[in-house]
Length: 365
Ligand code: TTP
Ligand code: MG
Image (cartoon, rainbow, N blue to C red; front, side):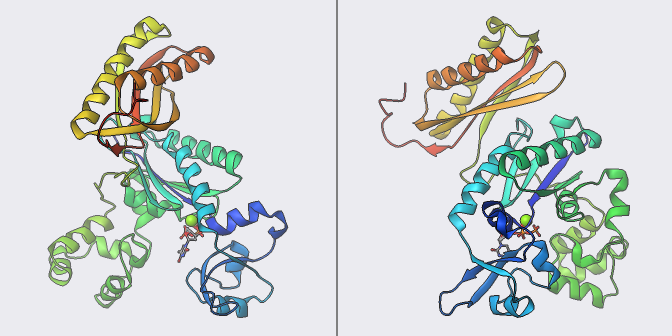
């Protein structure tokens, strides 16, 4: 099936959170600073809103310079733990939109405000459905967190990542395989994700200006200049080729199983035995790696191929099948009580994994 990857990047993240918390900041240039504490404005700009960017203020520049560019701007100190808590909630929302992940990881957080989602199964490889999913994600984040984001959707991580910055802020950009060359090729090589200043400069010296130039450049020459692995990567990337899979960040790995019911049904008598088997499989995997879990997620796909996920976080680490099955049954029963469309597939996933410590806890039954 055609792969579909979604990349999301929150808009002016730290400054947007500050604006949300203090509506009086709306309409003003807002600069969030990592202050060193030595003197009033010694330190660098962490980020700023788009009004501040109009004055030329950018991440990484000295705050004193930002002040010169716009003396009227509001300067605020970073509040990292607070932003991290907002980030965690957003990542939780995003995770629920990723594929069930039976063929490997389907969610990868790459920074405090960026993540990749594999949505191949959810969309059946359809880029129109992927666009709708992107709009749905924006809607949920806006509703729950009052923040905007930009989304890029493409046939791989490279294109999705580059697409998300094409319409910023608050944009959704879809680049299907058919649109790939039109999107990628006119761009300057420095825009290719993974190319730094040094490579960009060397390429310019070789007469390679656009990504199209790079795609058409002699691969042997690229290899002789950059080495085999970097040279072939450049050639592939310029053609929009990227096979890299998503990789969960350490500590956010999940283990799960999903399977199809014997028939589309709403009958617990048919659903629970499958749930039982899936819970057994998941526990077997956990046992083999001596892991405990704290988060249980149940996924269902109904006969219209719509997917729903619900998670529950327990207040301690557990590792027994009885606990897993008990929680999964509760989640599923809640779901069935509000849902009328028959189910086609069900899945169980556990997260918050940790190495088991010594003896089983008394609570772990
Ligand atoms: P970015 O996503 O690079 O920037 P942004 O979200 O502020 O703006 P954009 O709309 O262009 O995506 O980084 C995310 C957060 O990481 C940012 O809000 C602040 C922090 N950050 C720093 O602290 N220092 C930096 O140099 C950069 C680039 C980001
Ligand atoms: Mg961002």
